[in-house]
Structures are given as structure tokens and as C-alpha cells.
Length: 407
Picture 1: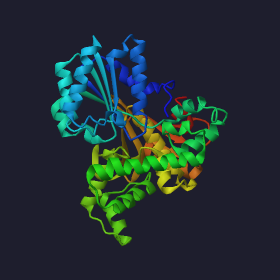
Picture 2: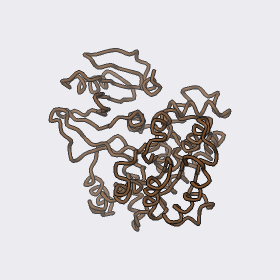
Picture 3: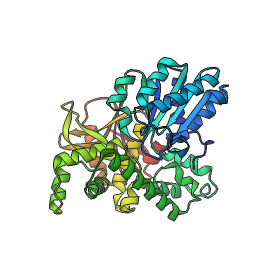
Picture 4: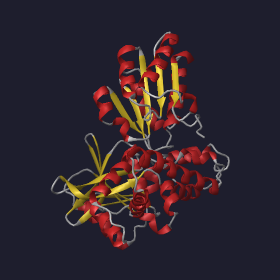
């Protein structure tokens, strides 16, 4: 489903500096977000650099072709054979490796025994769990892959005849409703097929990467919790909030179970937590964080699309964009006021508010918290309306779409 002529340059720019470095390159992200596509793009780049076909070993463990590889000894034997025929450095590309028992032992041995460069993908954070960390400590770099940003979505649409003539507004509405999974662009923009595709991804992630992997028996409770998280996009809440809600619905669930479910969903990259930071106290707060979701299309596969959810959808899109751009993202508090995002990268910090329309009443609510912050870092209010860019007491109003497209 993925078109290798589309480069996803933002990720190649992160990956290519590590080519031929003595580190395992680990690509993580929710199922179907494009990790396999990036391995294909990496193959193309390696060949462009003169690497021979015999020097590239690419294994996709979702294929039955490699069903006989059950554990690390099988994997090591296969790679050992490939090393003999490579006649030079072997580039080892291992896709969806997490179900190969003890795989980290094999990868560790590759680094010790062979002249090789290793790339690994996985759809579950167990890939980077304690066993891996023990064997490969200090010798790996994680590159988190997300579904398409809006700029990438437009790039993909431009390569498909069923979409390329849509207006930018139509593309934006499609992005809001169907999200950024790359595979939707191969479905001739048939909305029925897209809905089914996203539902299948949701079911696969929930079953394979959450329920089966964590041995969860209370699947109905898990789905109700996920509905709550998806339904409260853009709102702060705690495990107790969810437990109290479940109890009010006659479906009691303990705080510990809520925590376990949230960790399992984070581990499958379905959701991502943004901790809450007190700007004046300069400390992280223990409760009332926000959870954002990997892809809006997966949310709408479960809940359906609703126009009145726009505020939370916009926050989710901006959060993902900031993460893709390499920021550590938190939500903020100053006094009783909330700040949507505090984004940090090395010595850089940005404060951002996100809203739908900047009416007079909304303007005061969005600008005042940023104006109260006593530092000189960049402060931005993003909105969807056509209000011209302006500066109020050091706080800049920008178009949300322009922000996403780097204009």
C-alpha cells in the first residue's frame, strides 16, 4: 500500500546520519504508521550509495515467508548465512521483530560477530523493554515514527489522481476526519473503504498489540476506557477520573487496572501522555495530564466523526506536529490558567495555545496566560480563522494551517 516514491524526508533526515554508525536503529510507532515504508526508502538510499543487493537482508516478520524463524537462534543462523554471501558490510533490516523470542540476544551478537548495520522496527514498546536495554545498553537509537503530518498528507494526496485536484480545504477536512495513516491514500479515496481500513487497523492494534500482548481478559473494560480517552481528547484527567466515571456507569474498575490499561495503550503507541508542568513553580505535577492519540482516523473508527470535537482534534494535530519536529511536549499551568503546550528542544522553548476561532472572548482566554509568563521564549496563539497575524504584548497570533505547513 505504500508508495516508495514518497520520501517522508523528515524521518530520512533523522535516520541517514546514523547509517554505518555502530548503533542499532530502532523505528517505533503505532501499527501501519509507515515504519515498513521507511525501511523500503532506506533500501533505496543504500542502493543509491552503491550498496549491492547481496549486502541487504530485509526481513518482514509479518510475512509467512519467515514463519520458520521462531527465536533468536533461528534468526542468528539466517543472518550468519547472509553474512557469508554479502562480501562486505551486511545491512540488516528487521521489520516487526517484537514477536521473535529473544531477538535482542541475536541483535547483540550481530554487533559483536559481524560487520553489519542493523535496523529494527516494532509496534510495541516492549521492543525497548528491560531485556533489550540489558543486551544493547548504550548501543541503540530510537526513532519514533508518526502517521502523516498535514504537510505530508498533502504530499501523498498530490501523488494520487483521485485526490490531487481537491482544494486545500477539502484536504484539511479529509485530514481531520480520516487522519494520517499512509495506507488510506491507496484506496482511491473511497470513504467506505477508508472507514473499513481504519476499523481494521484499530481492531488489529487492540487485539495484537494490547489484549494479546498483555494477556488482558477484561477486553470490554479496556474498550470502554479507550472510548473515554478518545472522547476526552484535549481534556485533563487522571486514573481516578476514569475509575469514578466507570463506577457512575455501574462498571466498577480499580485505579490500578486503569493505570495498567493506560500503560498498555501507551506501549502500543495508541496514546501518548503529556505531563502537566507548573510554570511558576517550575515542577511537573503528578496528576491531571492529557492523553493524545496516534491518529484521528483510528479515533473516528471507534467513535465516529463529530464536528463539535474540533477543539480537541486541533490540539491533537498540533501535539503530534510538535513531537514529529523533535520537541518534548508538556501541558502547562500558570496560576489557575492553562497553557495548551510547552514545547522544548535543547535550549529552545515555545509556549502555544490552540483554538478554533479567535473571537473577542476567546482572545482574552488564550492570550492572557501567555502574557503572564515572565520569560522571553516564543509565545504563539494558533487558530483556524483568517485573522491576520499580529503581536499582542509579545504573544504572536498565527494561522494554525500555516504553522503546520511551516509557512
